[in-house]
Length: 81
Image (cartoon, rainbow, N blue to C red; front, top):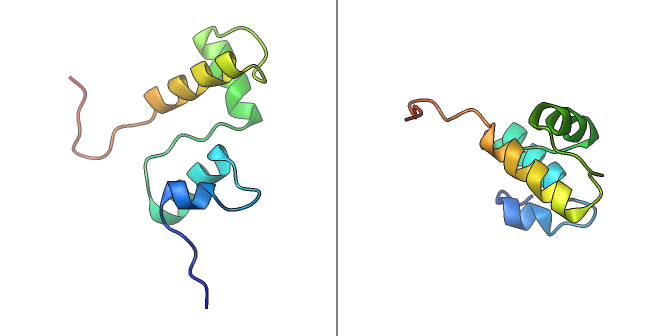
């Protein structure tokens, strides 16, 4: 029997699994703190954070990932400041 990988980097190596899907698997299956950046999240973040340009451009996508990760809630017991 083949065991499904648990580490983000190993999940990302599976065929057809991109960064957002690997993050979703880790967040939902393994309760990890991961940002997910699908089309809807990209649109909302672009508007909310004032990021202009096409999300298909690498520079725009990089900024969106940075914002998505920065807006993740902190783990329990980890306060800001």
